[in-house]
Length: 314
Image 1 (spheres, rainbow, N blue to C red):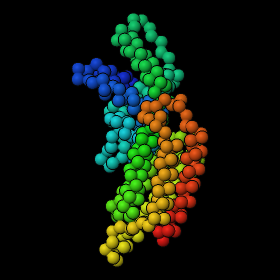
Image 2 (image 1 turned 90 degrees about the vertical axis):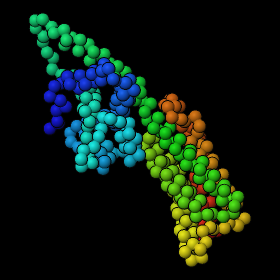
Image 3 (image 1 turned 90 degrees about the horizontal axis):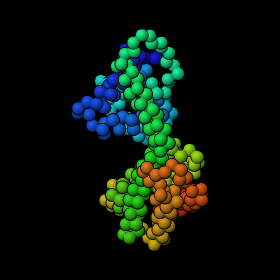
Image 4 (image 1 turned 30 degrees about the vertical axis):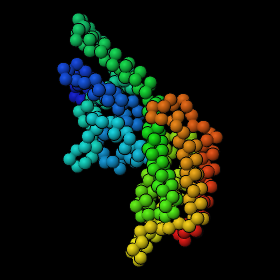
């Protein structure tokens, strides 16, 4: 049986109203609460936690989303969610109040009509008017902002990926210039490839229309991640056996690495276009030709990685 939100059905509204009109209230807090409620996944998290405390894993399984996406929504819930002594997620006081407001907005048809006889309580009239205003404002805010939320998250992930890819290309360029892979450079490169692989899994959940293409691009980065890992292990063996912390590259190996660097840059240019930014307009679609080009280059990149592996005896 679903747990009652409050013994007093007006308490959720009263808490929010008290926050709005209290002397020490800051508008930023009000904005954060409404921003936290704008996405349906975050409202679903509040409903799940209203039924019972949950572990991170249980939330993940109940929602059926990627780990990165769940982290994104938990961070945006801010002060509405907290943890109990056992480490399980629970609703905070603000979370309970916010859920009461959501219930009032989303399920108005479930309220039983009441007849008011005699003199109408002026306090109740004022309260109902304020509640109606808040409800309409909340609905407008939700429907205006909700369709932007997914693109905002998509923009955040792409910005992260641009940074990881740019740093990886710089490491590769340095290795080509020095004609060698150092242990420190490979550690950085391997770490960035891991991060890129993880972020692409999040991208697949955010842009389901291009899930297959993103998955194919991810395969190329996974192949380069495995290449970096094997190369790092080879250096570790050389360091142990010969006290050598670098792998030196000949001309042919540098040429292949140059082609790999160029194709990584092209994949980034096609699949992470600069017009997709944090807060970008959701009506701007991903260019289909760009996605096709990124996928084709990803396939070629995997072939070159296989060839470079052979040249480096991996």
